[in-house]
Amino acid sequence: MKALIIGTLCAIAVFADDDLDQLVKRQVAYYTAPLYGQCGPALPPCAPPTVCQTSVCVAPAPPPPQFQPPPPPPPPPPPPPPPVYQPPVCQPACVGAAACIQGICSCPQPVVYNPVVGCAPPAYFPPPPPPPPAGRLIPQALPGAPCEPGVECTGGSVCSMGICLCPPELVQEGTVCVSRTIYGIAPVPAPVPVPAPVPVYAPPMYQPPPPPPPPPPPPPVYQCQPACLGAPCIQGICTCPAPAVYSPVAGCVRRKVARHEPTKDFNQKTKEE
Image 1 (cartoon, rainbow, N blue to C red):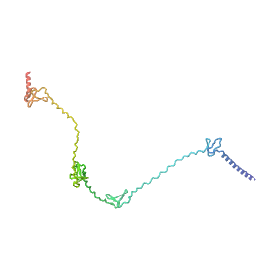
Image 2 (tube, rainbow, N blue to C red; image 1 turned 30 degrees about the vertical axis):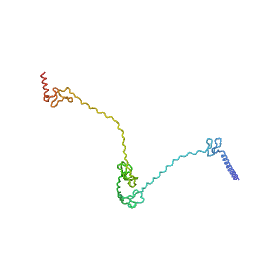
Image 3 (cartoon, rainbow, N blue to C red; image 1 turned 90 degrees about the horizontal axis):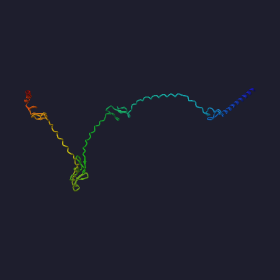
Image 4 (cartoon, rainbow, N blue to C red; image 1 turned 60 degrees about the horizontal axis):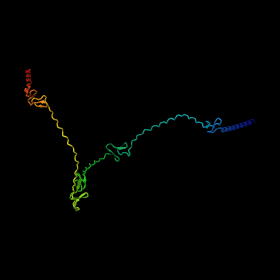
């Protein structure tokens, strides 16, 4: 009996605890403020996990990011393998003993490669014949056209007075000279020569004759000082005809007399003294 009572009381207590928990939960849900709702000391608290900041329920700030070192750089890719040199291949393949050098079929000199027979000796081509000598070009003029020395008149005409004219027994018909008897026409009178105009020159300008040249200066006049004694004065020097010589005391004297003349004068002066 006691056990039944104790079991009943325990069941009642369990149901009572459940009702109390539900009541508390209903009260907590009823008295919490929603997100962005007003909160404060006199207001209901914010519903978790929101927090009250400046009287408003806001979501909690995210936790600060934890520092993580940057990942190491990826390892460099392995170097590419060195290229393998592939010698060029001649397309089409070389014929005969020809060798493929840098993609070209070649033969030893002086043989030239031929794609049909391979290495064939060079074909011999005779040298071209020399060009024929160029003919001399002579200028020509038709009858009635002007002509000059070195110009050939055609059609049977001849160059006369600077014009290709037909001879008197022929007549000009187009670009040739034909006989007069064929047409039975009167002979064409010979052309009247037209004299060339006389060039008119302007009279020469008058130029006065040049002045006559000045007369030559007179010859210098020489004077002998002192005057010559019986001897001519030539260019300031008293000169005597040979064989005489001039003496300032006696004039023209012979050489022997002149040689002793100073001695006589000296003797006379001595006697006078």
